[in-house]
Length: 93
Image 1 (cartoon, rainbow, N blue to C red):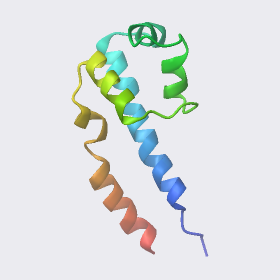
Image 2: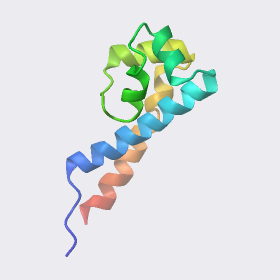
Image 3: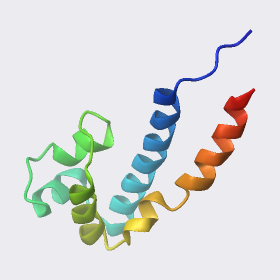
Image 4: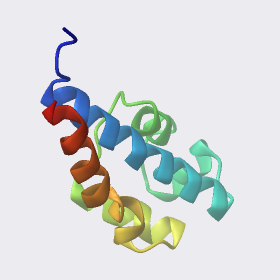
């Protein structure tokens, strides 16, 4: 019998989706990781560390990314609820 995935695994999948959107928004805005870090007033490796999961992003930081990349906040999280519900159904069995 295959063990059910843990809550941590489910959250990791959602966070990975979030990071994919964050990277896509940066690239669409035309910024390198270093440029975005500088414009956010952070260390030159800040964006890189966020994008490779060495650093988690809080809501205030997400607002800063959102403004810099000219994307609404919901762009980054708009599909989480349907994704979560679909995963929840898969993990029931």
